[in-house]
Length: 440
Image (cartoon, rainbow, N blue to C red; front, side, top):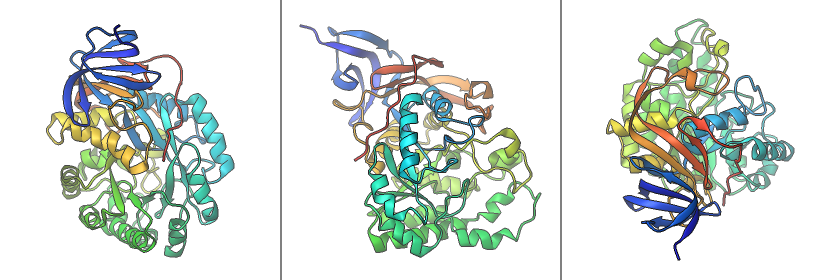
């Protein structure tokens, strides 16, 4: 008797943990049931992936969906629509919302809201503060929580844990890897008076300079060594940090942003003005090349977008009053596929950085591999399709992207989550069906 599946993906080229192979994929009950030739099989639904590459469902481990907050800028419904349109099956959402996710009541509200409004699966960060340290161990073990986020340097929002004593207390509360924004707050404040309002937007990278980031990372890794608590350094942006962290691989994992692999100063500030301002800042070509070297030699564990939307008016203010943060969840996959086509990394390395890497760093259960028994999450991409990124395609309410006008080769054409197609050829399918990601 022929095998029967809920969903059958036929004729695709699959990126498997052991290599790239032509294979069919059968799905039952939301999980991958079979990989291989399925010539005699039947299915309730069939997707013809001829000419396409079938990737495990890609993950953006670093987004700010601003929910709760200002729905006119972004929300979980709109941000996760953007994610699936951009080929992502899951996102991990940051806690610096309004109000912030720092206690059990706020977390429970967000868990319930996300499960009824998200278009893709979602993990939730909990923010560390100086006043919630005693509760962190319980909060990090809650359903759908990917980890604790620590802002050791100030960014958007009012979460800040800047002194060594408080940072050490956070590190001794709980067991899972902590994700850090690692700029040094003391250096940030000491340097602020060196610059005047209205200076060029490129001043942002002079204020938040290399030593600001490098000092923050050195301090954090010294504390991680002292406490034995594993650290995940977010948006590493300097050559100095990327060289330094290689001596701490027993404790430290590393994220690099698509922006720091794609945009370079001074060009980005000249072209985009306030729409290039983010924390940590876009830097010069030396640091971009160091980031690519770190991608190629394995120093980097995952890539994120740090999707952090703001209203256009907030980005158009003079420096330093312009809001810091860039949109990116919808453009992450197309931009990275363009890098694949340009020969900067292989497709298998891209899958490692946008799927297996986040799963490994955060302890995701059931995602991260195209393998039997795993969640039936898939990103189908056309590596040959050429397209220009246009702001009319962006569904985040703020409506802008720093990559507007960029011509890319490679495009996500379908997103499937737990066996359910949610996007095909720029069209959303069905209704929100996202669930909280499971973590160890």
